[in-house]
Structures are given as structure tokens and as C-alpha cells.
Image (cartoon, rainbow, N blue to C red; front, side):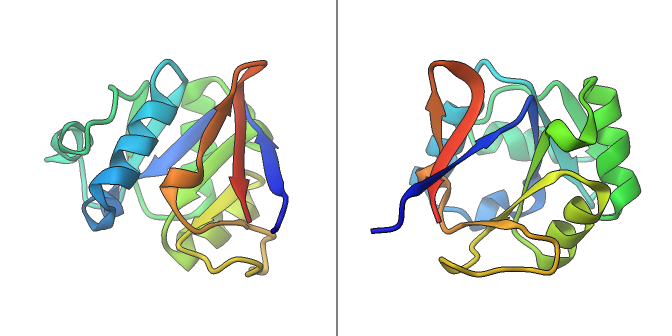
Length: 147
């Protein structure tokens, strides 16, 4: 069994464009994880419908709703708007381009759907399923998942 990897971050940015692709169990796990925490929703599909996608997934209201291309500048600007240094911000995304852009920006990229032990050029941590997210009570932003 692979040991859990614990990621420490002050905030998380979530790519909400792929929420409909997740199972109900995964959306529920993400909602439980985000509740009471600082998070931002990112979309390349524009603001129209973004809040509805979050609500349909059962997610708590984000502190930030941002739209823009998956590029380092988008992730850096979103972290700034959350009041968090980009290096203290985890980015949860399901596309390789977004994962690499987050890593290039200096964020902590979490690659959703990446196979275990997968690596990318940006050093993203693979997250095979949202159900693997687990908050650590000692710190509000400790995420643990099996990689």
C-alpha cells in the first residue's frame, strides 16, 4: 500500500468545469472537504452558469469565482484575490494543461484522474479520486490522499 501524501496549503482553487464528470460520491466528498475552508472556483466557461454548477455539485459557496484561461497568470491572480501566496495555494484540476499551468505559476498542483505514481513535468501530485481527500483536524488545510 502506498503511504498517504499530506499537502499543506492555505487555500485551494478548484477547476469546476469538470464537476459534471464526477460521481455523486466524489462531489459529496469534495463538498465535505471544502465546507468551512477558503476556496475559489475557476472556470474557462465564463461566469454564466458557474455558480449553478457549484450549487448542482452541492459545493459550499466559494470565496472567489474566477474565469480565465488555464495559464499561470490566472492561477496567480486567483491566489492574490484569495489573499494567499501562490506557493500556499493548491490547485485541483482534471486537465494536463491546467495542471502544468498551476505548477508553472508556483502553486501546488493536484492532478485529478492521474493514475497512481504518475508524474508530470510540473511535479503535480496525482489524485485518483476526490473521495481520497481528507481534512486533518490539526490544521484546516492539510489534505491527505493516497498517491
